[in-house]
Image (cartoon, rainbow, N blue to C red):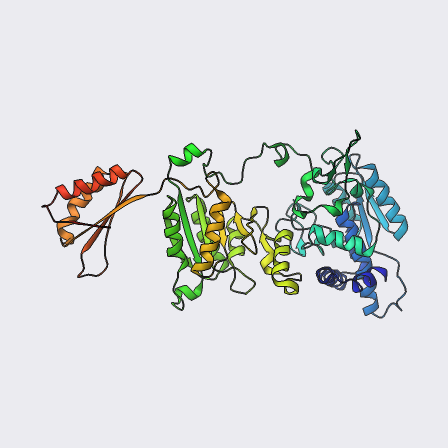
Length: 508
């Protein structure tokens, strides 16, 4: 079988893994359902073209395992559904019918809307499962697994998604490796094809030309697969500049930044901290770093290596803080649940990030392969990679949540410096007016100072006035923090006037 042979002879380990897993899903479905009970939804696009040839290979291998084939190519008996529309590209129609003739597809052509056509088809045919070319990142993929029952309100059938975890790169690696035909529009710069009303060539593939007609490179040369839908024309799309950011922290201008308080929450993830096995260095260090650039840390917590625990804390913090910093729980181990927790907090799923995986591949080589490379699974649709030349892999930002991979103080120092350089004075981690602070010590008792300090807090609501002792027998330390040095000094003088001279000593 030519598809299976092409993949086996390929040097692309990732593609082989994706292929083997997709074939397993197909063979599993063919074992669960009879051939009369399965169908294949084909629309002429690149994803369904990949699925067609995977089904051909999967059915062939399934029959071989049942000893029903001597290695000779078998006809493709799986019923094929095609929803024909007046808004489809003529090239898609032509490719679909040509492909049907080439491979002898049993086509059921539906010319009504998708739901009505499907209801009528399932009433007339014993179909119980439909193979779909859905991939994570598609609008219809949210909440789906490789085997997913149809949604409420739809006729009952099993959705089978063999290429759910395939990336844009995987799709084109398969098509080019197997040397199969695909729709000609993909060679004209189209990267994701919808209707004639909402699809144009991807501007990222445009070629500079002196001629009046714009030219485009083929779809497989798109450098960043996450931008495959950039050719879909929609109202309020990111391309026309009218879309608002997912999270607005009020960072509208440098002036407004200087005049407001910015707050951050810090979440550590690690049973080893809660068990007392290791001492947490990163949380206190982050507090100091945020304080040094004028930010207030409003909350710091440590949670268990548990997806729900991370999700609940992130959900609590992201709505009340300008930024949330997470550390710990990043990696491929069973206890590394931070990314999954962030995804759950935002109500999205984890999806393979092609760009991030390339960084991992350069960092750890062939170990970064396979279908379940957990480190390359990032929250879908909300992840931004923060690149810096000094970092081997980018930092991860999901809306107003930043995930740090540092495991010790020196690694945190490096990542923090890069973060400050990346965001600058007008970014999301803006450096604002730093705090002015003064500390006093006294041998007065807590009882003697309690009431005067309470009144002082009412007199100076713009200052943070705190007290602590380094030991129960040691002196009381009173700290004054504020943005205005003159107010801090006024607060110190006001407290000193409430007691006899010499009651307080200032600490440098």
